[in-house]
Image (cartoon, rainbow, N blue to C red):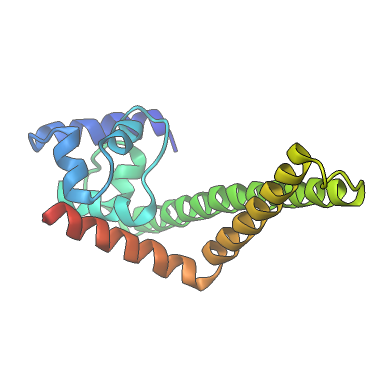
Length: 171
């Protein structure tokens, strides 16, 4: 999967439809910078948006992942397309998992520092007292956010946020 090729193809398809990045972003309910990042191959759209882009542009998800239009597809090519889609979804999930692992490690480290400050009995002095409380609060917040987004509730929260964002854009 060549991200630069995909980005150029997305840009080409958007221009064929006569849309600006801002217009496409508004239609999809994303930030215009997000569209720019897709087209410059810095990031890739998540799978739900990839399906929506394919539908809007009149191409298949496989064609988007190839970065070009394909001729007629055979059964074997369709199987390859399904493998590509599964691979893309797997990569997307791995990226998200890595981000949450970093979040959990950072939260654990902050919590360890806060506990170390309390054990060292430095918490009765102003800056250390403040830093200990800040570390504990931040670590707790990070753990809660991580737990929410790695649970089933996380997918519902993201879907709700997208619906709300689209509703706000329409008004």
